[in-house]
Length: 322
Ligand code: NAD
Image (tube, rainbow, N blue to C red; front, side):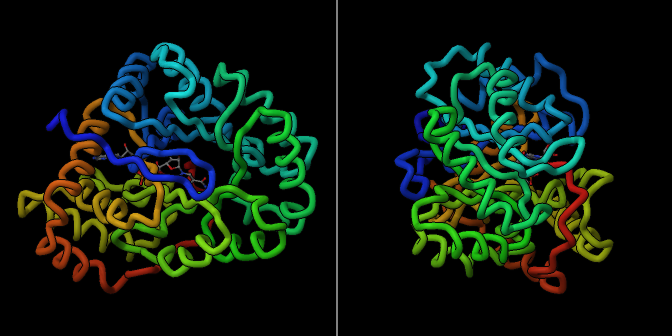
């Protein structure tokens, strides 16, 4: 890896936060993609930080609070000044179920801060709001998050979820500037780029855009997705064919998939779930290679052709673990 080259940073909407273009998705630290030891987690976070990743995203839901606890231990072990890294967590979705009430989310941030061993988080997001009443999110949850913001326990607030319509529904019903960021997942990857159409609207609302799951929660990996992956058999088969094509031609599907997501600069950061030093190094190298050499257009064209029959097909939100 060329250690002289720096991982690009991009501004997140109007927050003045400068996020590394590759963000660290910490759901794997909650063992949702398989076992990972505490030592490996600490080494992974440390290497991520040393290679220029400054954004770490978690949730109380990931591994039933395990991800937050492990991330807290890793950041403590890292020992970097608090203003050198950016932490996002979420509220409203828990292993026990959903609860977007003001009372629950207000308690939730205190519990998260304790597990993360932090005094504040940079971003607090309502997690997977399509499962709540969107009117409750607008009238009760967001006002509760604004109070949390005023208390200093979070610097910015946001919303996350799968169906893109949730963003326009909520953003059209809150005063401008209320919501700082949105986190969309699985909608800006090689098999589904539907987030692209929403980007001008989000920009007009002054909202920062976090894109998550560039590997479509494991669909774009040589080992394939986890058991719980909600995609249809047809989507899984097409993605496997694309991965097999890459393998046969000496290419890496995960690298290409990540490069696809990173190439749109209107997206501030792309969160990849990582659970090993090797994955961190590969993903940072993929970003640096993209910056230095651009995309491998020939292989992209082949992959896009293989994925054409399922392009922009999605699945019902619900059972995913991230
Ligand atoms: P992802 O698309 O990032 O895929 C993660 C999987 O890919 C894991 O199995 C990981 O081990 C593997 N992987 C990573 N780098 C690899 C590489 N170089 N080679 C091979 N395999 C590799 O999916 P994700 O983890 O769901 O998404 C990233 C993060 O985004 C999450 O951890 C979470 O922080 C966030 N997220 C949030 C929401 C939400 O708020 N609703 C939803 C999805 C994701």
